[in-house]
Image 1 (cartoon, one colour):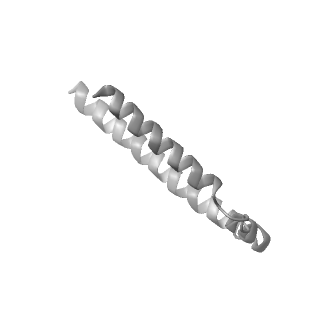
Image 2: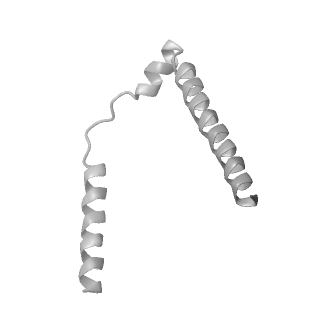
Length: 71
């Protein structure tokens, strides 16, 4: 049974890699368009705000859990 799983996973990896190489000529990247329009900075700023909010929430949650564990 273990060998069967290995062969199935190997086949899946081979098919995934052939699909990646079978693409036609590369299309212009969306990041290039956003960079030319100056909107990439807005996207980066929004991502940073969301991630910083998540980190602040996790830090506060950790402090609350630590206080509850001490009690």
